[in-house]
Image (cartoon, rainbow, N blue to C red):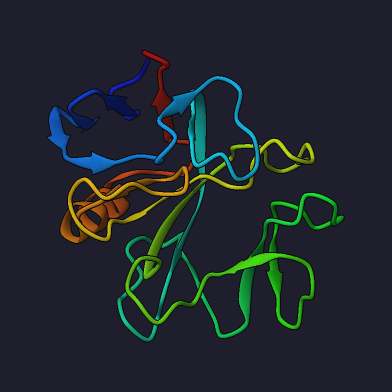
Length: 166
C-alpha cells in the first residue's frame, strides 16, 4: 500500500493522512461482484480517468477529460461495448454521464472490470459526488462535493482505490 492510495475504511475514505466521509454501494462490499447487485467490489482498483462537466466546473487536473452531450457508459453485459465509454445514439442499456443533477459533474473512473470486461461482472466503479451523507450508491464510492474536488486535484493516474472485504 502506498501513501498515494485511496483506502476505504469502515469510517471513510483515507487519503494523504485525512479521512473523508463517504458512501458505498447499497449491497455493501463484495468479493463476488455482479451486474446490478449494488455492491462495491473488494480489491485494488486503479483510477484510470478523471471526467468532468466543463459547462459546470473547471478541469480539476491537466489529465481530466470533459463529459460532453451524448456521453454514456454502457452497462449492457451482452453488448460488445460493455463497461465502456460510448456515445449516443446507443440502444443497449447505458448510464448517461451528463446528468441534470450534479452527481457526475466530476467522476474518478476506476479500472474495475475494465478494459477487457467480463460480461455480468459489473460495470465501472466510479468515485463521484454523493446525494447526501449515508445515501448508498449502486456500487460506486461517493463523497461530499468539496472533498471529491480536493481529491481530484491531488491524485494522479494510477492512484489506487483499495477496498477490503470486512
